[in-house]
Image 1 (cartoon, rainbow, N blue to C red):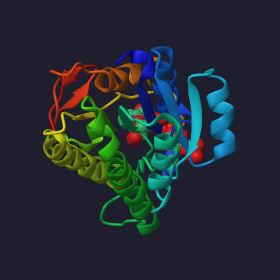
Image 2: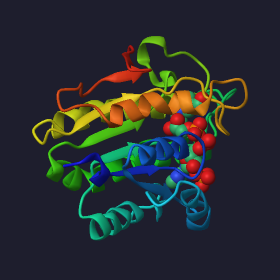
Image 3: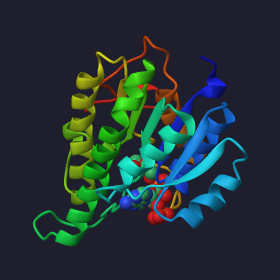
Image 4: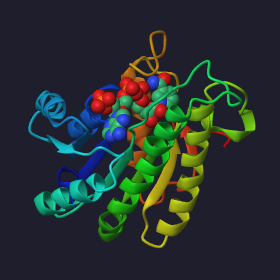
Length: 231
Ligand SMILES: NC(=O)c1ccc[n+]([C@@H]2O[C@H](COP(=O)([O-])OP(=O)(O)OC[C@H]3O[C@@H](n4cnc5c(N)ncnc54)[C@H](OP(=O)(O)O)[C@@H]3O)[C@@H](O)[C@H]2O)c1
């Protein structure tokens, strides 16, 4: 298998960290599938990355879109080597758990947890079939239980749940040699992160590292900048 044949799916890839991860993977020779909820936006973004990139309709909050997107990838490429669960919403800074906005809480769960779970489940058979699959859940230190405190309640609880899902998927997919890890990109200057954070290239690098681990790499871990961090 040569690297040029490998296929990666990145959710929420029309902008921000997802787009940059897709860009870095395409530059490494992957076929980069940009999972996007607005196909026109996604096609514009994919075009800027050249012939290795392609947009795929994928609203992770839809019950049917993940299976349809994976079906499209299977028909086109016949394989999937890497899944990056990147799409997320609602960094609810200033919100309080004792006075919740249930719309925000429920949308955050639907996208950040159930969405990532749906896409992982849809991709698992193809990732397992290749024997070298990599699954990266883009998480956040905001989801670490050891340092959990008030602030961003919907976001933090969903990232803690995503971390739990990471552990379970890593265990279930170990026999198929799929390496599953959670990665915090650090504070990054994107629409979600706002200004002042580090450059998107730096934040994406740790995600790409986890997506391209060698076969003896870690699974079931939580990392930032290639270093293990507390759950
Ligand atoms: N930026 C930071 O400082 C930071 C820190 C820690 C962790 N993270 C994590 O890094 C990841 C990327 O964050 P970011 O800063 O790049 O965020 P962003 O700039 O807000 O981009 C979010 C992306 O997710 C997509 N998205 C949202 N809901 C979706 C859905 N239902 N289906 C498909 N795509 C959807 C958005 O698409 P649309 O354009 O259609 O809205 C957009 O492409 C997230 O998981 C975030 O929690 C970020």
